[in-house]
Amino acid sequence: MFRRATTLLRQPLMGATSRRFSTDLPAAPVEDSTFVEAWKKVSPNVEAPKTPLAYMKPRPATPTSLPSKLTVNFVLPYASELSAKEVDMVIVPATTGQMGVLPGHVATIAELKPGVLSVHEGNDVTKYFISSGFAFIHANSVADIIAVEAVPVDRIDVNLVQKGLQEFTQKLNSATTDLEKAEAQIGVDVHSALNSALTG
Image (tube, rainbow, N blue to C red; front, side, top):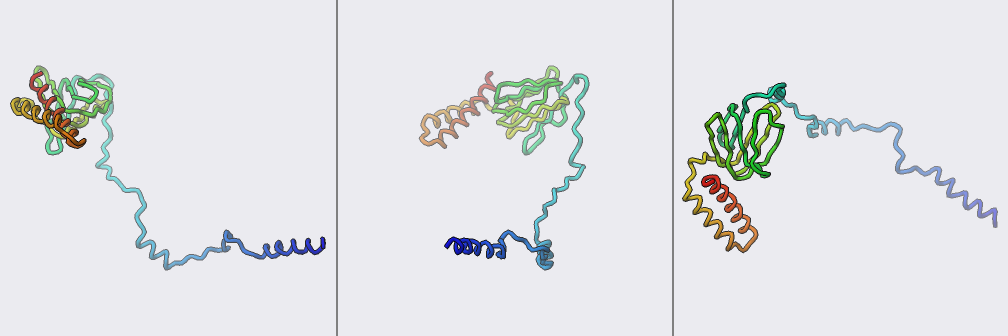
């Protein structure tokens, strides 16, 4: 009986050696040239896009000495208010508070909130009310200010601002949904900033 058991155990092992595994690969892979040519015609382009060197201007060098003027670019989606204007200082309404920028300012990116942008050139001060945007202060004393909306402060009607503030305050008090509250709060914030710009 013991001899018979050993022969039975040997049989599956012998049979298993002749069986092929699913992971076995053929010695030489067969290439379907028709498929390869068809794939080359429809395959997506995976090469990195080439950017013309004309669009990649070198970054201006950081000056070794402190410049006397700050170069300002003030841009709106539909117009360029200031282009390479040399000024003494700008004050921007950052979300962290009013930020004064002088020549030689450390490189900074600041998000802007509704408020007054002041451009100081000697004794002349030009003020704009901006709704929102970003200020990019570069180490080479260049400031790029991008705003969604801007208007000179002297073109704003005080009576319309106060009327709008009252209307949005009433809307905020009577709002029932989150959307109505959010829209009314934005109106209150903007008109409050406008009112402060004109009265303060």
